[in-house]
Length: 105
Image (cartoon, rainbow, N blue to C red; front, side, top):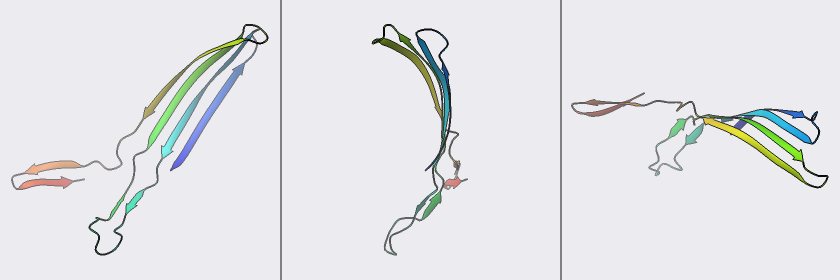
């Protein structure tokens, strides 16, 4: 599987006692094609070559670390993640006929 990733962080430190971290991240998951081959001539496996589905994950985040004392701090944040899959590489459509069902691509 191939994985492409883009990430950007911004660190804000201008406010006394606060350290704010914000950013975004995008991951693209690109699987390799799969192949199914029979082990030998006696195998009942049907040969298959096909592509797996791809997916993309996107996130944005914001975190604030507040220093209460020299030895104690409080951190709070939020992260919003969205994962989406564009759909199958091959779409099958079943057409019913009077003699049975025919599978088409």
